[in-house]
Length: 218
Image (cartoon, rainbow, N blue to C red; front, side):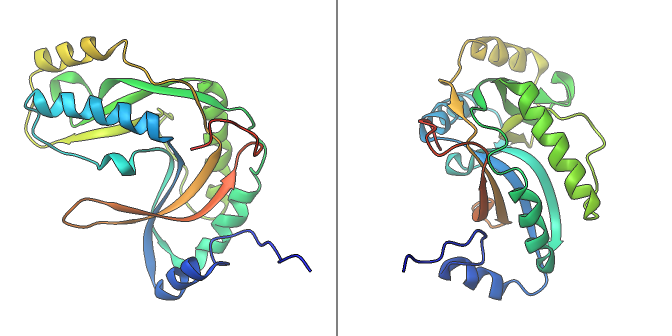
């Protein structure tokens, strides 16, 4: 008899261990993972910022991701409910093609706190995915996002003020730096553990957004 295939983060030994260790709450988010070539390009962009003398905390390149929904501190008992919601999107967004690159800042150049890489491509489909996911999670009591969806990948969280002139120069020099297109093939539920080395992201569960024959799976 063929082995039984089950969907969900609690069905293999490693993630069962995570579930057993989760007795109260975890810090979690849902995101699209990035393929290696995209993360390497973003690492190079991040290196340019470091060389420019930006004083910031730097997310680790291996942890770069495209956030769809930051869940914050959630009860471990809600993880199965979140998985049920995520599974409703299985196969619903085949061929969701994106690219990453260039840089921008939040909230504005004169008071920048975050430097990020932009997303282009089928962003209207990505926005639809976000709002559908946000609505489904709101039903569970996870508050919906009040501001508009702005897809990006965080490269730096600024610790000391940076002149708008310097930021303008960095932004202009990055305008034509873009990754090759990639498929947003999976939506992943991550556990985020804060440490002295930065946030450590652990995959708990994933849902395929498209078909398995997508050639640019991350």
